[in-house]
Image 1 (cartoon, rainbow, N blue to C red):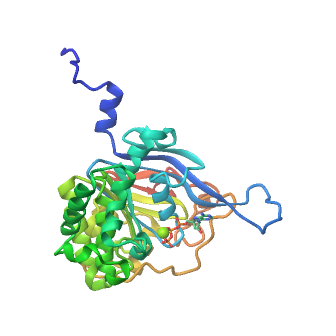
Image 2: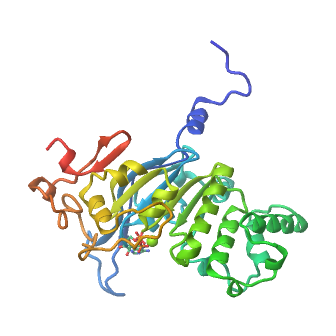
Image 3: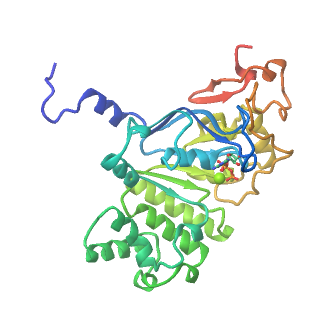
Length: 344
Ligand SMILES: Nc1ncnc2c1ncn2[C@@H]1O[C@H](COP(=O)(O)OP(=O)(O)OP(=O)(O)O)[C@@H](O)[C@H]1O
Ligand SMILES: [Mg+2]
């Protein structure tokens, strides 16, 4: 047996390097409900924003998260980036529990994991020129001299096809179109060379005609840089176009998770089936109507009993009223949280 040389990684480190980049283990985020300034909060009055979610994102792959408004997509993204902390459960990044990071390790994580938000007008300070907006992350992380930073800003603008880059340096956000500004948002997220990029509804504010351009750019850059990506979208055609794996969320839980083609072509969870019936996925790249809720969505308040989808499920069974369904395999790497496939 070869003896580990000085360059050999320690076993734990090697496992982290080969394991998924991001992993969530039974992650919960409960929000306390506020009942006015002086009202006492009764125990158990909370909203289950994210309720026991587990998944992993392998290095270099892309995960799509879909589900209707309020199901916890943004909360999950914020947890993964440690913008908020879980009520319970763990989030691992490169095998390290995010809650243990502080000081330089936290700063390094902040560089390696970036979030692109839905509204490009919110992402960029309206008083900043494009040069200032793009240089800011470099300044925060103490990267480069002033000249280096300008070179990097120009290269970043060119990379997102804002050419000639010089023409954009002195522009303010209001002088750019939504599509151009979302490209700046992407460039800004990439300034510090992240390895993980989470995009929350990256094109939903954009005109349909420019969505494909921004998505193609994100896809090409992710491939060229071997980025691990996570896309949140209402639009299943976007998820199909960009993501290898798809996760469907319902009321803070994972309803279905698996290879995108399997989930979208052969959905197993009644909720995924309902979503696809409401908005069948056309050819990739073609715009799709947003997922519409056929009924009022129940609110995730108080203790959830049984399956979160029971009140809307056309195939509800007695067990669904009392037992929360665990994720079970319904195909290769394909899981659904539904009693139809369980031992009951
Ligand atoms: N800071 C907060 N305080 C209290 N409740 C919150 C907070 N953030 C989110 N929530 C609640 O948690 C649930 C999940 O919200 P979240 O924003 O994650 O949903 P979403 O899936 O991103 O929805 P959308 O598609 O509309 O963006 C919602 O019911 C929301 O009202
Ligand atoms: Mg959201």
